[in-house]
Length: 326
Image (tube, one colour):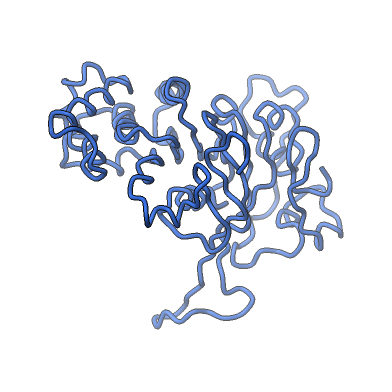
């Protein structure tokens, strides 16, 4: 266990068998598995925000669901507060209330037939928290006030369709906070919101982190958002982390060619000194990952050695980078 880490992920892998035909028979051969996550290691310190960044399909959400204990890993381990998460979840029901999720889509994650009071109270009932109905009501009211839905009494009886997008996401956050978690997994929590509302929700999460000391694993495809919100950034490509380090270091001096390409297309008021890097080709099929460095088919710096060497994360300046050219 790393000093001060609340979450430690070691060599995490999640592979899915390929199936074909109406019979559902498992496909055999060298491409029999979709390697959604393929050897990911990182830690999250207490009170830290770690942003997991990458294109759609790189494995970010699979990592999040595994950290939450919602899917079993194929290999590797997730430790929460020094305890093996998946093993302990089967024995300790109370552990799940300490790790909560903020979903991407507040339109889909809220039951349209339940009023806000019932939505936020449901986790309390599941985990048997609160001193009876009155105690749960007070916890619900306090959670709504904390996320900025004030006065709470005006929102308790409303249905999700009676709320704005930002208000819905605040209800989602309140439902996650009401069990007093120590780790929040936020999967693209602002991507479905209007631009004017995104900064408010990020500011809210940051304030909750500061006030409660909550750690946050922040899943996003947007490096610009990560730059504003995260303490550290981990960049994923095709099931692996290719660069990880302090946010300022990664943003100001990216070492991996993939990170440089992502940053080159982030909108900026000034493009002086920045060359736009357009990657050629498509991301390889996770069921047919290329030999050597998995980024080499699209990398502008690749040479013959990159086709045979599968680089591990190694220190490069202030970051860890999986690239022989870094």
